[in-house]
Amino acid sequence: MYGCGLRVSEVIGLTWDDFKKHGDGGKCTVFDKGSKTRIILILDRLWQQVKEFEKYHRVKQHQNLEFQFILSGK
Image 1 (cartoon, rainbow, N blue to C red):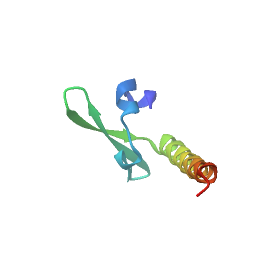
Image 2 (image 1 turned 120 degrees about the vertical axis):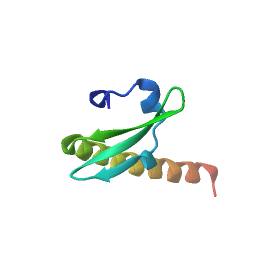
Image 3 (image 1 turned 60 degrees about the vertical axis):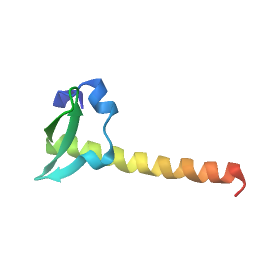
Image 4 (image 1 turned 60 degrees about the horizontal axis):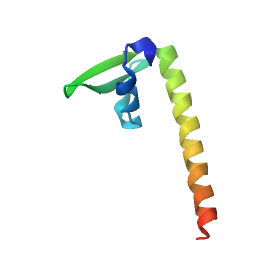
């Protein structure tokens, strides 16, 4: 996301709901300091990488939930 000109604090505040498809690429709604909102366009090559990371993240998140469920004995 550095290539899009985002600050670290802005990237940390992102959720998957902030990302939307836009043409061949995507766009991201960023809430920066001073409660300002801006839209960042994401080129198609980077968009593909973002979507691949999202798939990986969701699988890992699901695996962690299953693991926590097993550890809790429920």
